[in-house]
View 1: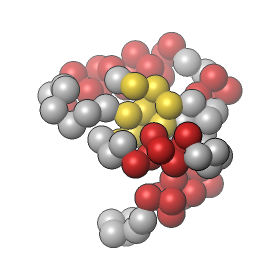
View 2 (view 1 turned 135 degrees about the horizontal axis):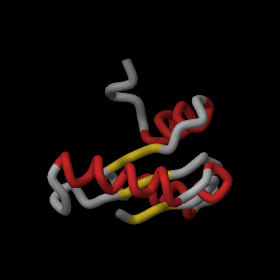
View 3 (view 1 turned 180 degrees about the vertical axis):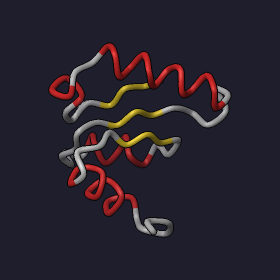
View 4 (view 1 turned 60 degrees about the horizontal axis):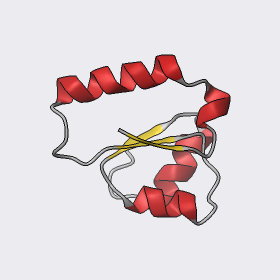
Length: 77
């Protein structure tokens, strides 16, 4: 289980698994800005969408951007 791991470890895991990290935690935006390599971060403020709306936004993102476009990119939802 990944619960309790620090942000850098979580981002490294997502990167190793070739997964875009979806988060409400703006610390991941700072990690990206510091130059940490990743395959993509989808950031959203936790109060912006319902779960259903967030899933819809993630589906739109998945259809709009390629894996290459997401590499080291933070998408603000």
